[in-house]
Structure formats: structure tokens, C-alpha cells
Amino acid sequence: MKKQLILFAFLLSSVMIYSQKMKVQNGGYDFIKDQKEINVEFVYDNMKLLKKNLSNEQYMKEHSAELEEKTRGKGKSWEKSWIASRELIYSPKFLELMNRYLEKEKGIFFGEELKDTKYTLIVETVWVYPGWNAGVMRQPAKVSTLLKFVETANRDMVLLEITAKDAPGNKFGGTFSNEDRLGEGYAKTGKTLAKLILKKAF
Image 1 (cartoon, rainbow, N blue to C red):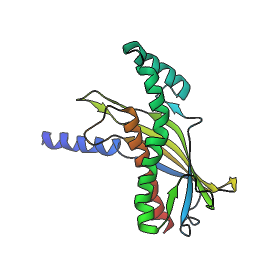
Image 2: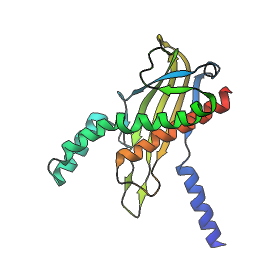
Image 3: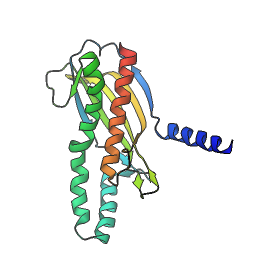
Image 4: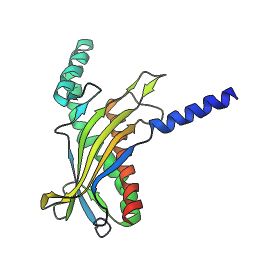
């Protein structure tokens, strides 16, 4: 009986860790089903990090200094990979999962720099927690975003606005890379949003 309770507690904690909350703030889904392409833009201008709600500049300065103290040159190298991960990891992961469901099932393609689309999805990163991996123990990353569908020609016209809170990010088997864990958080956000659209718009 004791073993069963421990197993149940473990499963429950897993569900809690890997759940994500999405909430519609305003708008509806009707405009999506007739589209073939939707432009996507990723915005990081005002994102905060960690429980201290550090700005990106503060976080980079502190983390880079910690790495430099251990190994000279490592902090500067990390700064470059941290910024590059936006284009190399985060946006590709998000788009891959969006298109895996919506392009495959409904023929709607989501992509960056699609100039002639009627609508644009703005993925604004609000808060991230990189998580950590100490081998035996690990903590998944978390990604919170604001997802806004707007008219491409008139960004003030918001058709649908969704808050996505605490998307969990971790790779099977774990990873020691903060950027890879966060990338999985963006993938989870894309997957959850795609499934929500499939359920509500069709």
C-alpha cells in the first residue's frame, strides 16, 4: 500500500510539473480556420528571468560573470550562444510543433517573415526559468508567453490573445544546456497552442 501511495504521488507530481496553463484573455478562434499561412514574430524585449524577475541584461551580466570566474572566456562565449539560441532553438522548436499539428491536419502553415499573410501571431516571451541539471537531480525549465494574433497590416487589431504560463521544458534523459531546456518549453507552448486551436477553431 505504501509503495502504491508513493507511485501515485510521483505520477501526480509529474502531471503537475508537465502541465501548462493557457487562458484566453480576449477574442476568439473563428478567423483561423480559413487561413493557409500565418506569419509569426518572436519578441523578447521585456522578458524577465528567474524568481528575482531579472531583466535579460541583468541575467546575462550575472551569469556571464559567474562563468568567467570559473573559466576565463567561457562567459563571453555563453553570451553569444544565449542570444543565438532565440533563432537557432526557441523559434524553430515552437514552429516545428505548431506545424506538426496544424499544417499536417488542417493545412495551415506558421512561419517567420511571411509578408503577405492577413494575420500575424506575436509570441512575446514574458518570463523564463532556465531550470538546472545536477545529474541525479534536475529541475525543468519554465517559459511564460503572451500569444497575440493580430492583423498584419494593423497590429492594434487583436483578434485573439492568450496567456501561456509555465510551459515546462526538459529533454528525455535530461540535458545540461539551459538553452536546450528552454527550447523544449517553447516546443511545449507550440504544441499546446496547436492543440487548443484544433479543439476550438474546427
